[in-house]
Amino acid sequence: MSWLGTSWSKLLRPFDFSPLGRLSFRVYPDCRPHNLVTAPLQKGVLAVWHGRELVEGGMGFGSPVAFYSEPYFSRTAECAVNNDGGRLILRKTFLMDTVQCKKIWKGPLIRGKTYPYLDKAFVRAYEHSGLRPALGMAMALSGALGFNTHFMKGELKGQIAIDYHLSPRSLRVEADFNGLEREGRRSVALLNEQGASFFSVYRDATGLSLRNKGIGGWTEVKAEEASLSSPDGAVGFSLRRIDGARLYRGLEMNKRVSWSGLDYIVEGRTMFSYEVGFGGREDG
Image (cartoon, rainbow, N blue to C red; front, side):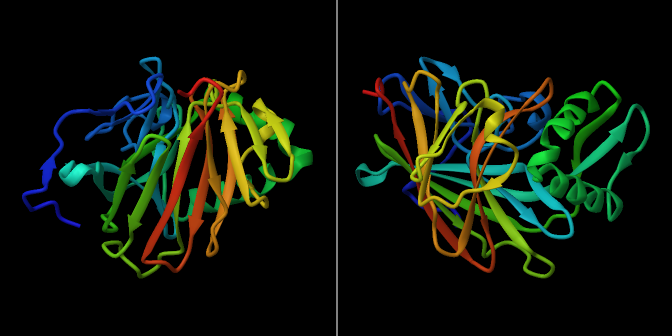
């Protein structure tokens, strides 16, 4: 997945693609835009509406997380662009070198075997619908109580190279996991997240419609297709379920977190590709 060739140019500055007028896309070669808790992490493709970035605390479209005994994120990446022959491809190679930790006030970072097991137990409880209100309040209060999420450098688990094929009505994401360490790897998530204050309406092919916090935390999507859109329906994005992967919806918003997304979990694959569709009543 190297760009050493005449058709690839290394990307050293933000790249903007504006196929739809009001809706455009942006890719940073670094960790910008440095919002909220995900500030130190590399992002995928950002949606831009009337010149305003919509990602908030989300990870963008096509951003990877590798799951071993704990999740690995990326804070180091390389970017290139290919605009040869009338096609536009952006390639971002994410080094999976960062782990998630917790810190209580000014105490030490909590990492390793202890924190992931606590986190998994919390997620299982959070997914139980009867406990969501109380646990949602606990998450909102955790920052005030001094219990916050941080990211720190971990051992390098290899790299994930992702090609973004940009076109006027869709974004095709092609991920290559061959550069990722296989030993101990459980799965890879491909996140498709923008800001929760903008993409706050969920709909799917079964007719289910949810808004704001009613969308819930990570919940598996059983419908063949699902979408997230703005409250006025002006712009939205959709993804389809794909054999061999699980699709999840989610929305979280508090003082340190603001994301709304449709995320894939992939197991036992060396390559994975999908398409993000865009639409809305004013997208032209």
